[in-house]
Length: 405
View 1: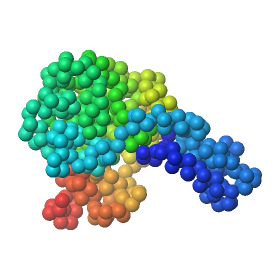
View 2: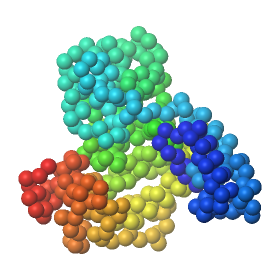
View 3: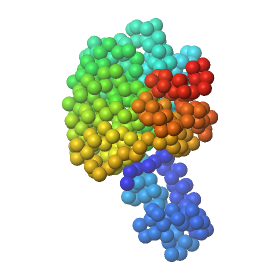
């Protein structure tokens, strides 16, 4: 079972959850007894009044995907040093008096928060241009600018600089190279300098303590829930990914696959398949945390299910060709359905999936439909997400679309 933890998981909070569950079971509350029935190996207790705290701990752990409470505790202990919260570590880098190197680095990199976007990267570039010597003064700035020569000098002066965590997010320099979205001098050369000096090709962190690692490959491949306009792939993603994979990065990168599954482009998948995706590999992050975020089989099932449900025929064919999907799986045709308060057209617009936008419109999707949270139409979603292709299509079929956004 895939792990399913809340953001910034806290053992004390989970202990309180267990005590709350124990009290609710002893009181005979139906939701609590139902939860025990689903997650306790022995099912619902015969005598709820005697339900033990140890049993409540077990249910809490199993509901989150762990075999036992001790395994959950062990994961949290191991994950504590690996957890980073970019939202908390990036208070307001453009505030007056903000230290320029820290601010430039914070603004330059994808944080996988809703702050990501071109305005931040432009501001970072301005800060760096205003103080060109920052690349000599700060290794993180040298990394985000992809200045291989400056990085070589930093490493020559202090070999530990190649792996030492720093900057606003406490990242090693390699992550600053691959998560940066400001113009870079030589990103591939910079990554090679760091790898040659001992940087880990499987460098990464646990975003808000969640179990799936955001690795160097994750940063290279980019994209994600905020859409490719706000969280784009690295401009040199292919060369950087090939370098990392050649140096031993695990191709079974769960977060990279998740982030790129929303878009029908399969170039990332083709590259990972060529380097062993779907076959047993190092599982380095499972060893670091003590538990895999999801098994390889669960990882592949997620890919197959998404492709099937979103009409990604080429992706299914690719997975079938590599023996990673059942040839009997067929795609679900594009329909103008509504899910989670928004339509399929909203989702396609947000991800700049022009082909899907056209298919949904042809199937009768309403471009005037408004989502349940923001009350906005697919066109506005495309504009916010910097999804220029989808916005251009939707502008033509949305009332007053050309004047909005």
